[in-house]
Image 1 (tube, rainbow, N blue to C red):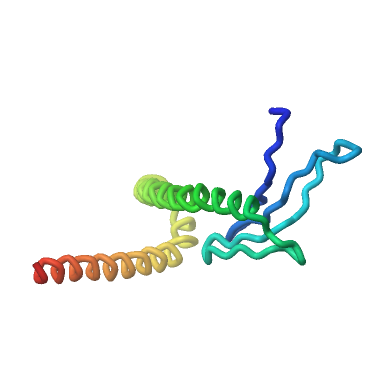
Image 2 (cartoon, rainbow, N blue to C red):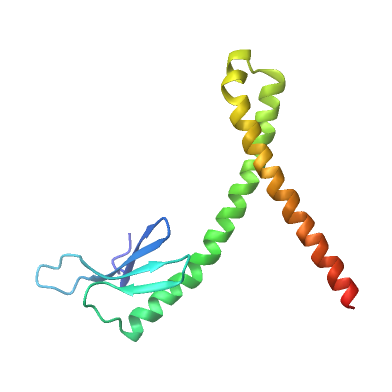
Length: 140
């Protein structure tokens, strides 16, 4: 571990982070973390904590964190979807070759409903994209 600590610590949570200013310049040389803000990634909101006023340095550090965090979360989402496709393929193979009747009874209805819901949304979204492409061609 490096001896140099960052000036800010971001405790991530489901929709963003709680931002702390890290301080080691005190008499006891202890690490102190003072909460200064809450960040909502989905809404892009930064709310100061309590009566704290955010400095330009605070806002800059938070914006830098957001600039890195948002693309990271997007990449993770796509990676999760690719894993889901792999899981669906593994599930298909399991159903085809290993599943027992009682196991199939346990999962069939919920899996069919989830797949039906997903298929409906995918088909509707694909149709929307195709129509938009055709509209753009017509405009040319």
